[in-house]
Image 1 (cartoon, rainbow, N blue to C red):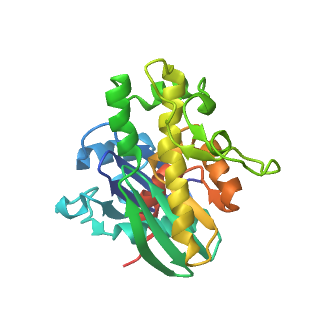
Image 2: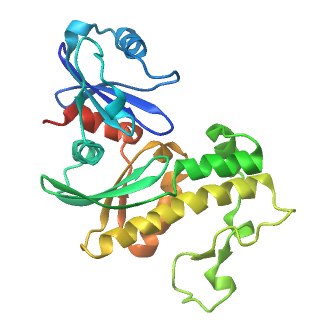
Length: 269
């Protein structure tokens, strides 16, 4: 028997809007809008998943555009949720850790420290999916993430990044090639495949390194990653290189792109 009362969480991001339906501890649907946000679009999503307005207990909205929604959605006046609180609630939904840092990898990147039931925004970076999209448009004349990722599958970082062992003596027992400079070897002869992988690594690797630095002062080595950048097929592999270098742990949940929307749905006043 399907659940009958659900909470809707909506994350109005800079680049896209994410919607999640949650019932108890179960995600019953999650969608990225391909249209401009409107009550009618949310209603269509609800109907597509076999629900109606009477099944909705509450509608909760977070993200950069949350304060502009001053009208009813699905028959409810939306509850406004602080974005960092939504990040915190979403990350807690994904893991049972008591202390960790959320790495919200969206258009930009934010870092939120979670300790028990408390959360604190500790900083952020303008480096993120927006950087990747902008550079992709300039280099590849398009912003299709699928196209860039397909190219990157055939790329080789050794052809685009300068590694430390190429400029200095490195302990031969060390298991990794450490990046000394992203895209340092790039030139007119660089293949599109190598350039694509170098571009992905430039963004993902440096977000991972910043995450490590954000946890240093707190002794935190566990990081829960949410946001659309986690959808990049190479994201996990590139973060694993950072993880092995610094001996830290990155967690990428299956529903990571919807972490903030899920957290908004779960957040209490």
